[in-house]
Length: 425
Image (cartoon, rainbow, N blue to C red; front, side, top):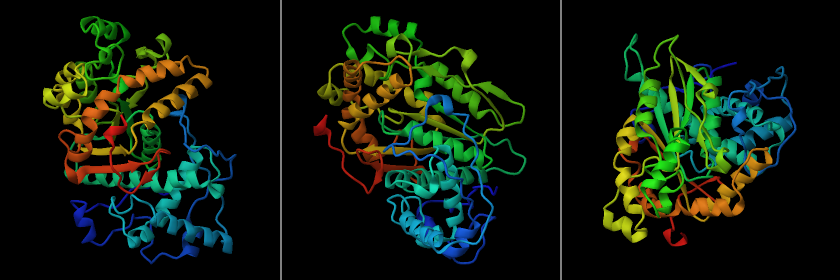
């Protein structure tokens, strides 16, 4: 099956409007035509369709997804031609196409690529690509595929800086998004698309870098009465030395035969309070690695003057002090950033509750509804203090030319830019 590799992007997003797009090598250079596009794309065979408003990815499925199934090419029916044209119009109406530098001409030149990625994602999430609901179509063609294409351009630009024969470190892409906003599923989809496109990628969450349960208990004891450090989550509850060792090891995976085990965190242990998983169950990754997808709810937060954080919550002063060391442990490794921006912070509580309900439905021990509300309340001061700066200035150490900001609604779908209302906290 043809690769999804993008053409080399211009040096910056602004320059995209002044250079003619170069289509991937497998695409014809002739103008878009619905009949040609319909005949050339690979369509997955029909599978039972889900009508969930949000596509889910159980953790156990991270490496079990099968590749999309193709059907023999045949003459296209008028209905199929019309559906491809409709899909083209739907893609162009998406809120992210301008942000990733895609004009209508560039979409037309790369329509095969969108269709192929859509077929692969439909197969990944066990959907019938010919009968997608509006929510599923939005999630795939307005969200996951545009973000993937942007990431591919970032990888191509990163690798173009090196000479033939150089050991090229993987590009570390940071994904900063509030809890429950869909970052894990997004990263799951991106990782899959990279892999089927022939790029070796790995996922890492800031959750995987938490202190062990024993160390977290010690942190709580050193900060009696501080609810923000009683449980995992806020700055101070991560093992920063372990973080540095992990990220340094990942970016050194530049040759074949080099291997390492990637840490994982088990949130289901200790009644939902969690603990670092046993190394025996950590997945192994092998070089050469091209992409590291690094995600977390507080990734990119910048420490603020103490007077500001004390106005939000006096307990946040210690957290703010802890945050000063995080750029050296996390931020300096990240070259490209994705920031998912929410409008209503009250959604965080509901999203987290949905995640815990799903965990319990999957037979895993999780927090009760009351415990979820208590747990999330310990994050809200950090959201109120740090998100406005993150949204206004970007992540700590980020470059605007390598930053993609995605506004989402309460259904976790991308929208045109909105405002952040701290008064809702």
